[in-house]
Amino acid sequence: MYYIIKDNLEKTEKASIANSNKQFVAVLSYGQWEDEKDSFDMGIDMEPLAGEILSSEARVNYDSITGTFSIPDRSDFEKEYIKFAFALDEKGIVFIDDYGHVEVIITKISSKKQRRPSLERFLYDFLNYIIKDDLKLLKSYELELDNMEIAILNEDSALTSERVYEIRSDIRDLRNHYEELIDIAQVFEANENKFFLQDNLRYFNIYLNRLDRLYETASSIRDYTMQIRDLYKMHLDIKQNNIITILTIVTTIFMPLTLIVGWYGMNFKYMPELEYAWAYPTVFLVSLMILVVGILYFKRKKWL
Image: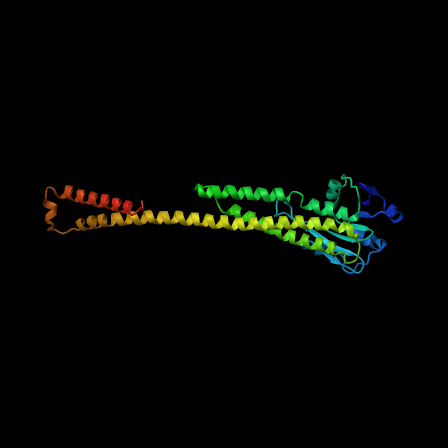
């Protein structure tokens, strides 16, 4: 697919690109790129290859900028990342994508009418689309963590730490992704090959500022997940300590009673207490007194 950058992105044929003084956007498969790359006349030193996409990055060539995108799926960070490559110069940008990911993004942003259309503005809209709902996503994570904190303080027995670790993992992936996008935007803003108009570099600056805010928010939420994890661990420790305390109290109270039971359970022939009429009531009352005194003692010490 080929587009001319006008007020809106306008679909065209490849032949029209050569005859136009407008900047272009092209979306090719890797096979098409291999067949047609020479016709774009870009000075490429480092070829964007499909099998080598491990991250989002941009590299400055002799007379072009090449790079790759590796974009996590915001609905499920465990899914395969969206991956494609690109090459650009002052005439336009070529996306190299076998799976139609770029076409989806272009379809979403192509309807926007621009007062001053340019390659820089297109790149800004394209990059901005990648992170368009991220602030809302981060806020939803923050709200979920707030609810977890309230649940912990209310001693919700159904709460587990599993979700906290999932959120922390998602935030880690997002922070890494933002760092990579920041690197790409900085390469564009540096404008080493003078492909972009000086006045239009502000688009990349605006984008970098937004990425910085998202990165800081993600870092804050990552710290929050650690606080929630520590709070949850402390809550478990307190519950375990309470259980141990109760077991200690029960053991301490019933230890003398166990001694009495063991003592009078011995099978000696001459135990005069066994002949007394009041022996059983006396032992019962002594045991009851030990029980009451033990409970009152621990209540006074605020263990109960």
